[in-house]
Image (cartoon, rainbow, N blue to C red; front, side, top):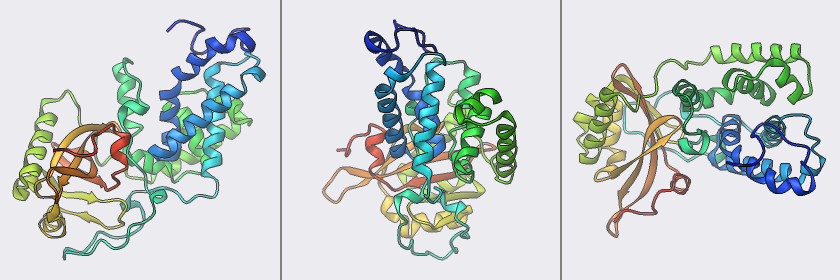
Length: 336
């Protein structure tokens, strides 16, 4: 893209320079979305936060003196937007993080759904990950948007969350973070230490992200799709870890273990028989949009499934039963 350098603002920041700066603001949209998503844990709130950040930046261009990098200035605005959105709000979580035990092996009722704002939501890779970067950087980016990692971040107070993301994920220097947060390097280092201590108590190493280029992982996922679409539960559970976990936001209930998952799929979950799975990518992981058979024919949206893998088997899958997410992933409203 032509125009000014991505990270620096020229002396023409005001007046005529606005026309050159507008595309630069847009160039930062994806990385800002990645930052806001890690802060907020919501695909929908991420869109709102990024849009608000760019609107504030555009309105404030005449006051921007160009002495700091445009990128740093945008992150300062985005941090303030996210902290404002987080103030006084309950943390988002996954069902396993709410303190409840796995559902009993008996076919249990789901119970009442919890409000949308209680859940960490999935997000498409392309909304928060830039293409064409170094493979090692891509791997770090994928790991840092894993559902488990984003859910763990929600345990941190907002400013600690910002410090950890900026220092550990985006590799900012302590002096840069201190300037962004209007604080001292000592305060930043202290916040980072506390944040690390909190995350150390979370189990973030139990599963890994499948490698999209690995033939073994691709075969495992292909077998999963085949078994699910045929609704061959014996074949499906044979692909699972013995202690695999299944959860279904917005419901608090979750299941652990092959036997309980099989009972659920053949009991209350039997309506999933005949479903079709459309591959998507979410949170750095393989995912599938599940369309269930519609009474009127064809298939209608049901859930976004995000898959975790460990030791050559599926360690868990989260079914997000929010059909509004299908638009976020650019999916069709039904399959005929």
